[in-house]
Image 1 (cartoon, rainbow, N blue to C red):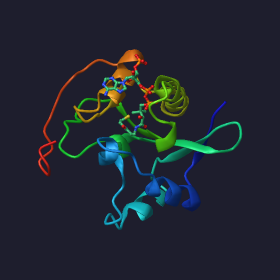
Image 2 (cartoon, rainbow, N blue to C red):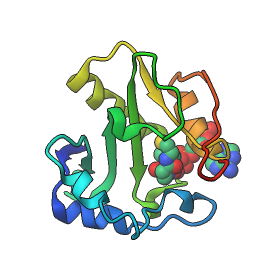
Image 3 (tube, protein in one colour):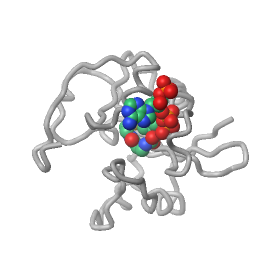
Amino acid sequence: MFTFHLIDENNAHTILSWQYEPPYDLYNYLKAEANLLQHILHPQSTFYSIVDKNNELVAYCSFGEDGQVTGGDYRDQALDIGMGIRPDLTGRGKGAEYANVVLEFADSLFKPKVFRVTIAAFNKRAIRVWQKLGFEHQQSFERETDGM
Ligand SMILES: CC(C)(COP(=O)(O)OP(=O)(O)OC[C@H]1O[C@@H](n2cnc3c(N)ncnc32)[C@H](O)[C@@H]1OP(=O)(O)O)[C@@H](O)C(=O)NCCC(=O)NCCS
């Protein structure tokens, strides 16, 4: 049902323009992050766009360092996952379905022994999705820049 593509410039622009409603606006990319587009499009970046059977862009995902948050302790070996569903498709009870296809894709690419996600503590919706897929809480940290 879903296809993954290494992200291209067009999709990168679209994803950077996505606006989540509060309190999830934390996940809006800031226009001030000037290097972000170059970073996402860099050959070593691991950002993928996810399209549905109608070829519509519905989500994106990223792996490794692109799934980490500054301040976290990432010394343990694991594949980090970042993802975002298109804002208008969130909150419809499909989160675990999307996250599961991302896991399957990540497994086929990297065959990691362990997966890891880093989620803002207030984001109960995301925490619920990953717990449903069997993820367990391991550690918490406070981000220095904003105390989040
Ligand atoms: C995080 C994300 C993948 C979740 O997907 P989603 O489709 O929006 O989530 P769902 O609608 O499936 O909701 C997931 C669960 O959270 C529950 N939920 C929703 N809001 C909640 C809240 N405020 N508190 C507690 N639970 C909540 C839902 O009831 C559902 O539980 P259920 O399946 O037991 O009924 C998606 O919202 C997203 O991409 N967000 C932007 C990026 C982001 O948050 N990234 C975080 C790291 S992955």
